[in-house]
Length: 128
Image (cartoon, rainbow, N blue to C red; front, side, top):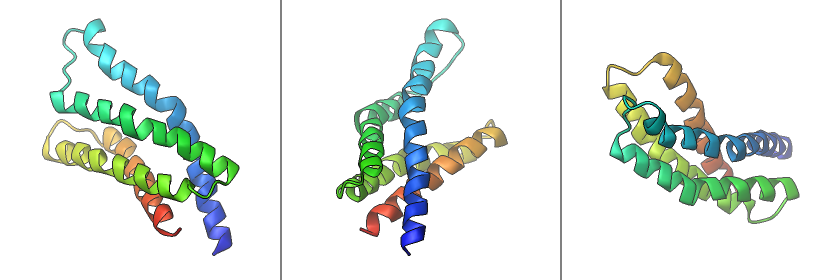
């Protein structure tokens, strides 16, 4: 069981490092897309999800990366909070993509692994 936990922590460490770098860059592109391309449409609910991501999810990614990297005891609790906070909007995005006919399989292939990592974070938080 110890090896599996170390493997999951290593996987989550790489994931959180990726999210610490990628999240601000991707969200700025979504928000500024309206200014550079007038035909770029973003639903109002998506802007709210981006704000939730920056106020809750991104700081937890930073805390989780630090906590897992240094082996802090509170890292499992923040992994659980991150997993719940990331899975809820991800389910909303995926359900909207499934219901709409304009969603591509390439877009689904991006969001499904992110939901998987959110669920792994929840399960990692529940083990401690």
